[in-house]
Image (cartoon, rainbow, N blue to C red):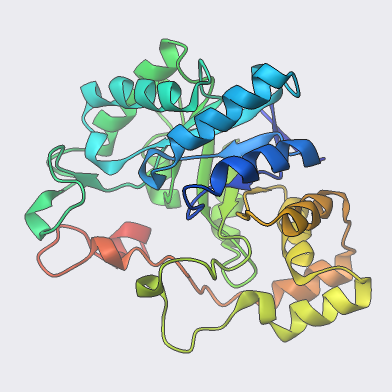
Length: 316
């Protein structure tokens, strides 16, 4: 297993298990199977609506003695209706209670977007709060409070551009991780370079192209990353799966990746990707696929009348 190292000596397993869209009734068994296979990094979020079931799985795993709490790296995320400085600590405490894990290894600001506390889910543009009204710096001050209380060992962000990251570099505790969409169609080399220069780790969500995301988030006739001819050809040449090609690519770039699956066979195949090495020629071949193609565009935040636009979200 590859690891991402932190300044305090902590090490995050580079390959983790994502839990977005892991359905109730399936996610607990997937967590237990993943831990048996060898996964030690589990990525969660309050908005996924499955933290309580994941917590039940953790309780069973710990009781059986398969692993201890300190053997796992557990991440969760602050949802957008808890961006007020004083709302962060209660939010992380709720996730810790649901996950039955005493503390989080990593807590992330899920989106650089604020929702009114009493408006989840947002149903109209006025339910969204502009960053002028509720600055990200206020939210980050709450995150720092959670860190200082020992509720999280590390804090970071998700879906942040280099510009938004830059605004946080002078804070008492800068973000240690930025979780973003990363895959060969969206390689984000500038973001990767910025993160490396500023000692910020990157975690790749949707590393396999997010084919299981809601239909409303899909474009007509979109390209399926797992069916890409170049990826398929590499997989055939190396006698591995297309998913393993994509995950090996992500880990070899020095990022972590959190593919989601509840299928035992695919869980094992994905985990095995951590041991696959791609040569320089293959990495260069994959690099030609970059088209700056987002599967998660963020356009759901940018409905008419919203204070947010897609361009401002990504600062592009």
